[in-house]
Length: 115
Length: 112
Image 1 (cartoon, rainbow over the protein chains, first blue to last red):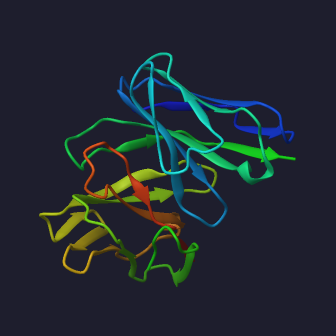
Image 2: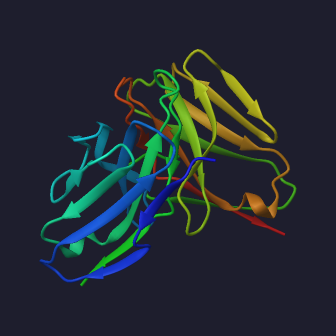
């Protein structure tokens, strides 16, 4: 079964601090994504990647950087964490089942609280 | 119905009832995905319907797609307590880049 593992599961950070969220997949998928979920809302795309050593901006990239050092690993970096970045972050990988038919496999999420 | 700019919708039903959740989207899509999210977990795909399909079934699930009105629905027949979850629709906005855009979701609560 597809496996996407996120770490840490939860984190408390201070305003202005640096935060790194990690994601590891064993699906052999080329595509990986970082989404953000705020309480009572849907998921919004932050960054994504099609291949190692390359990342693309999603819909809400401001305040976030991404790194894809290998096919299996994809990190989300908050250089200067802010209160507004308190949210649950989900990583996903996809199998590209053809145009418009890819399935996203999600990790269990990282709950980030910025104080 | 749900879409990204809206807040999460809530729906409570009795076990055994049928339920339909709606999704309207604003931009052309080649496919509509329906994901289910259990508490404390990431979303998981439960059914997808392509733009050339009007209806898709999987077990007790039925998805419909009306491209002319840019709307989709997900129906669950004889809902069970274990169907309690948040249900999201997601579209690709016609992009070949593999980016999915999610609606705000519908919180379904099935009461025993």
